[in-house]
Image (cartoon, rainbow, N blue to C red; front, top):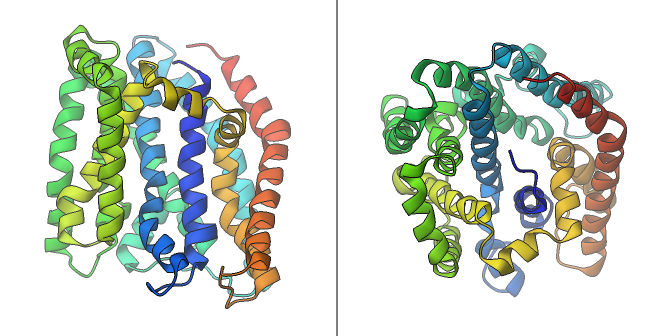
Amino acid sequence: MPRAAQFDGLRGLAISLVLWHHLVGAYLPSGHDSWLGWLKAGTDLAWCGVDLFFVLSGYFIGGILIDRWQSPRFARVFYLRRSVRILPLYLVTLAAIFLAIWAGWPGAYNRFAPWVYGLFLTNFGLAAGSVWDWGPLTVLWSLAVEEQFYLVAPWVVGTITPTRLGWLAALLVIVAPFVRIGLCLLWPEWHLAAHVLMPARMDTLACGVWIAWGVRSPAARPVLDWLQSRSLAVFAVSTCALGLLSALRFREGDVTQLWFGYSLIALTFAAVVALVTRGSPPGLIRLLSLQPLVALGRHSYSIYLWHMLIGVGVIRCLGGPTFVLNSFSGLCSVLLGFSVTWIAAAFSWKFLEAPLINWGHRHAY
């Protein structure tokens, strides 16, 4: 799969949205009596950075599956590479979180047994409990969704063959809203289930898989050509769509969000990824290729795992439990929390993640 700078830039954009949501938006004052309140309301959808990660995961993993599925070593090498990429840093993070809980970190707690987090079942725990966990543990739900996708995707592709993968991906995009609605009708008390369970979010992952299939399939070329020929219009419509969803401020369990919101986000990001694969629009490619954004994307995994523990920890340490971002000193606290998180992530990349990735790539398909 292509490792062009703009794809790391897309990851950088995704983690930027997540960081804004948790380190900035969460602390802005509410209400419409100041511009900060309007800023908080207008950027309420920044949590959808996770959805961009899902689309990118579907795109890259889908491409690997399509290109390598006939290799006799495919499953072994695929799971080996995924394991060395995900598990070491994940387990280090879990150890740090539970050490903080054991040490009596202010406000730290866990709702589920450690094995639930260790086995990537956080999303099932949240769905069953219908309540969010402590911040550093709550964010692990998206890692659980991705790991469950990694677990089943190779067997699905091996069963149906890549030539039919595009049709399956399109079907999953259509079926996912019905899964979400069904979950809320059958278990209305499980209002988080439609937000955190993999089958309910499979349209986002499937959109990425469809793009991976599309760039390799002559049948999809007319669609991608059409998108590229209207790249500026597609990008503008995508931006407006996200702005509209943000203004409407849908929440998990909202019927409109279940039917249309998640799917619209998935299709919007899929369109952007499809454009980036074609190198358009040029302005977007130049933006995504900026070195700070590329570096942020390269370090995004550890930043995502640690921003609620380190970043929020710094902010709460300096601003207290009632911290509100409405002053210059408050802005400095947020910037320091972000900086410390990124510095830790850069060290993680250099001394842990990159060496492990390189070791994993020594095992060829």
